[in-house]
Image 1 (cartoon, one colour):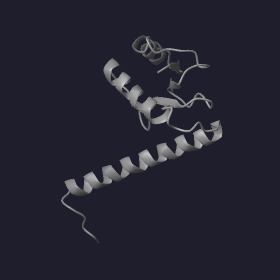
Image 2 (cartoon, rainbow, N blue to C red; image 1 turned 45 degrees about the vertical axis):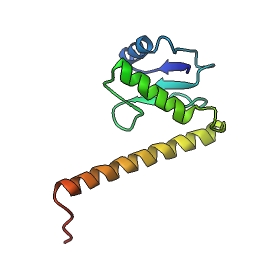
Image 3 (cartoon, rainbow, N blue to C red; image 1 turned 90 degrees about the vertical axis):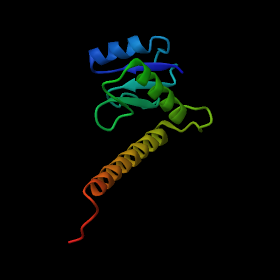
Length: 121
């Protein structure tokens, strides 16, 4: 697993570099990029931060490595066909939309169950 780190936040950049020192590689030869924004069209981007991201902040070194391994297995495994950059972007957008929709549904279901059921008006 080879990872490039590209962040706008210098603090996040340095933290990721320290935690991932054994996995760092230049963007040209990395398997994926960890970033706080959609920084690359040629490699899968593992987003880190708050909101709809692959890795939520704050994180520990252990949770960061675990999430990186999950991302690698999901988006970079050799069993996956290599998609052209445009198709890869579309796939990642669909995946993020699916994940967000599933999370929204889970939250609404939790509220319904917590409040004792659905009362039709």
